[in-house]
Length: 295
Ligand code: SF4
Image (cartoon, rainbow, N blue to C red; front, side, top):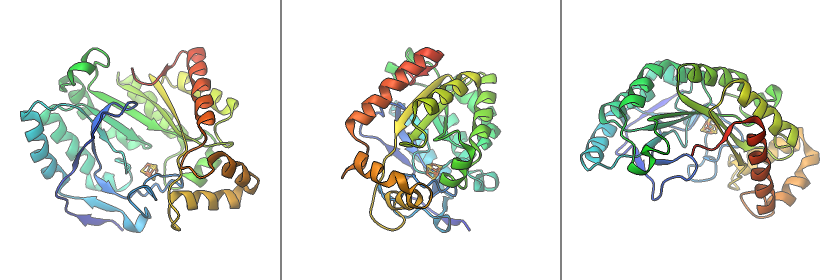
C-alpha cells in the first residue's frame, strides 16, 4: 500500500558537499522504502519508522523540482544531485509510478549532474536519460576536470552472501543482480561502481569478505568502490539499532557482546576499527586495481 502525498519542497541543498559522493543536493522521490534493510539509517536517525505501510510517493515531486531547479540554474548554482539518500529510487512501486524517471527528465532539462544510489536493476530502464544527462550536465567548476562526468551510478551492497542478504535486506534484489546491472551500466559506458556500505562487523567485513568483494568488483568491471562502516541509531522498537540487535540475537547471539564492545555508547564502531577497515580497503583496491572512491 503506497500513500500519495504532496510536498512543498523536494530539493535538499547540503550545507557542505559530501566528501565521498560529491553531491551538493539530494532528492528523495519516496518517503520510506519497501526494501526494508535492517541497518537502514533512516530508521532512528531522523525519519523514524520505515515500514512498508508507511511508504509514500511524493507525487508532485517533478513539478516542485522544476520550480526549484529553474531558480538554481538561473543563479548558476550547479551541483551533483544524489538520488536518493533516504529512500530507494528504484523500488518496486517505481515501475508503476515512474516518479524517479520524471524527476530525471526535469534534471536533464536544467542540466544538473546526478549521483544515483540504488540496489535495483530497474535503474537500467533509465539509461536513455542518463546518456543525455551525462552529455549535457554542467558540473561545478572544481569537479569539471577531476570528475568530468554528469552521471555516477552507484550500486549499494552490504554482503555477497545471498542467504545473509535475504535476511538483512528482505525486499531488495539479490546482490549479484545488482552486480549484473552494474556491469551493464559499464558496458554502456557509464561511470558505475559499488558502495560496500555498510560493511557489517564480523559478518561481511573480514579480510576474505573484502577480498571477495574486490574480486567481484574487478570481475564485474566496477569503476570505483567505496567501503563504509555500519551506523546504528535510535532506541525505539523500529529504530535500526534495535532492529539490528534483534537480528543478532536471533541469528548470531554470540556476536552481541562483540558488537556492544565495538560500538560502546556510540552510533558507530570504534575509531580504530574504522581506520583499520579503510587501510585494508586501500590495500585491496591497489591489489585489485580498482579505484578507492571517486576522485
Ligand atoms: S534500500 Fe536504502 S533506503 Fe531502502 S531500506 Fe535499504 S538502506 Fe534504506
